[in-house]
Length: 184
Image 1 (tube, helix red, strand yellow):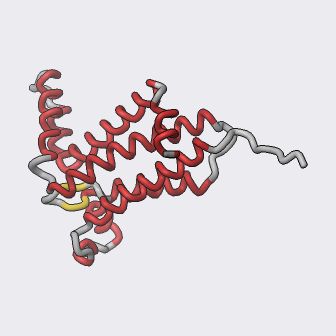
Image 2 (cartoon, rainbow, N blue to C red):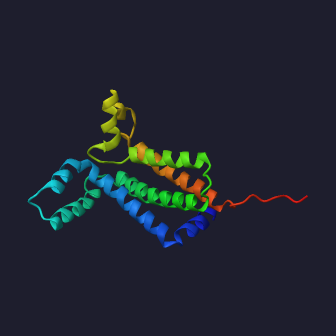
Image 3 (cartoon, rainbow, N blue to C red):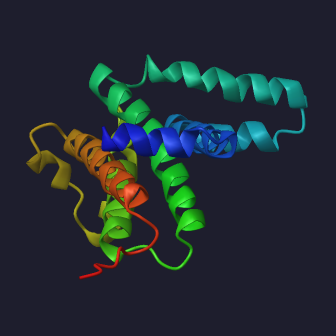
């Protein structure tokens, strides 16, 4: 009930709803476009393609969620994008409401959820794209073989962390802005 009340407080304002939608869309686009970033860069920098064709091709990549991702990875990729947008909108609402300071533990959980969610972004063919791109730099090329689901655990963990983060932020939103004084 507390979470629903906090979500209602935040998203009754169209500004925060717009923030959540824009951030969710950006994160989803990032997740879908990331495996094809070289092709996308070529398309964007192409002098032969018209602007409308470039936009059409970029939008067509959104269909790859059903072809390049497993059902599990597509599900947590969509959930991460939605929860990320909600999380950011709630954090901005909280900062604007309680401008003085946000307690550090909720912000750390939020950042942890975002980072673990981004590590889990990936498709069926390349697994966790960001993780597999970063790990060879530190000499850990086969680390995903250790995990039973090939790194998809990061995506599920990211969804859980973002959900927990939303819970903590909702709790902070519901906290009174001032402390009550006991008049005994």
